[in-house]
Image (cartoon, rainbow, N blue to C red; front, side, top):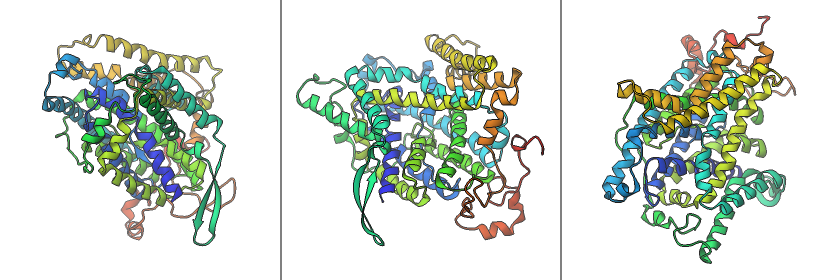
Length: 539
């Protein structure tokens, strides 16, 4: 039960920040109760997709939910001239129905783009193309793709933090204290088990919930500043600025597909969102072997990885159809929770999913997270986006940083996309081919930093001559080794693995009788030839 709530709270902490960037870009009013509906939708979809992933997907205890990676192309799309928000005077003169249609038409555009672009992930996953792609997705491709997710959003972090730098800096300091300095401080907790009776366990509170503890503590400080009128009425740092959202939100509301209207599809939106899909695919693949090691499970075989990526794509399709305004990706926060608690149970994650689904129906609960004072969110952004950037840079451990070739590729693929993106934002009408659709497509693609950075890094790394060792391909291949069969014994500890870890919960006898299922890349009975990127030189 304790592990269940640990994963549940970690899920919540990973989701709450996304609407603070998404909803203003959709032209939603700060006190619009529909903000709580969006976060409730995200929570509900997280529960549904994670339940599918752990049951018939990769079968690892991974959590699938909203991701920052989709915000970069989202902002690029909404920066197009036709989707920019009108002036404050125009918005203030609108009726409630007009304001609602203003943001819903944008949400429909995002929903269609997310759902259609995710079909690419479905195809490469269930089609078994992941292994071939890894031949070209090298560390110097991953670094700019993932790092630019964090670097591209620094202005959003600055805008939120600048509402009150004192509160934002306090949030940063407190989060640093909890997550880095007090990380090994444990608290005694009394537990009861039927076989062992009452026991005292030592609980790593700060290691597990640094973000949530920081939000609660700083929110309490904002409450004190509000009660003592240190902050003037209407100040973004006050705790009572958005209370109207809670009173206006219904107690119960069931999110459903197409709740904002039928999703619309445009070529520029789909191609832009494709950048987020690719970034999520690369990031998720790196979590699979890590999670397996933490759980004491065998390395995930090809069919499990194929199913995992395919199911993530299906989850993103569902997120688009449900109108969450975001896709799905593997939560690194929950992978870290497994490492801390040493509890890698699918059942725990699945029960946490049930809680998420129930919470997504209680609209008042989602409204609570929307009213977090904005400077607190700004402080969280500063740390969170920095960590995303660092996660991308961590792939440099595989490459030779003494190589002038690698430094050139790294520096240019990180710097040039930021330059191009800023220039495109300042000159949104610079692309003029005579065709509005072509103009929108080119503008979105050139404005999406993670796409430009990934393409530049991939092209340069595969064009400029360099040895496999210099490029980090040998070390990367060992880390991301894709196997056809699941080994029975851990080579390091000689410990036997639990057999059939990645099999379906039902129907395996039937699959084994049908020989043709061995040709399906997502079937546990899959028996392919090893991918070229996974073969050793001797073989």
